[in-house]
Figure 1 (cartoon, rainbow, N blue to C red):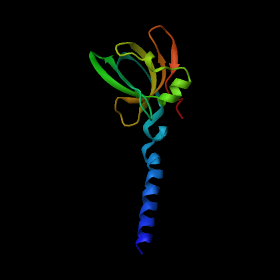
Figure 2 (cartoon, helix red, strand yellow; figure 1 turned 90 degrees about the horizontal axis):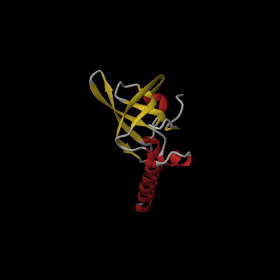
Figure 3 (tube, rainbow, N blue to C red; figure 1 turned 135 degrees about the vertical axis):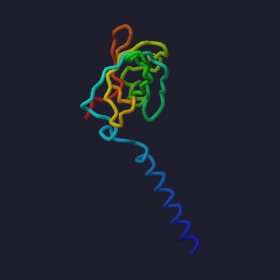
Figure 4 (cartoon, rainbow, N blue to C red; figure 1 turned 180 degrees about the vertical axis):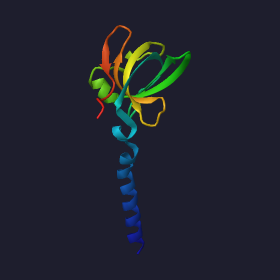
Length: 129
């Protein structure tokens, strides 16, 4: 009888480990509005080069105030494979980035194209769906 309970318990734990990644990921359409493409210019204050997606934090001057934005991008490995190295995003640099605004009204978005101080451009994220 105990073997039956142990087997059932291990099976349940196995299902939880398999299902966990699906809980963690999100849909672009659930979070971002593909009809609200915005363009922001500001100083990089922080770069989170971590899985599952990078985040670029920039301070954007707006109407006499500074607004901090957090912009999500592709996973680090995808960026590296497409020629977007980690060290190109430097704190203190001013960049222009297009992004799809979040649906919840917060200062977050899905980053699309980054324009660097020298005028070069790289894609940080996907086209809105």
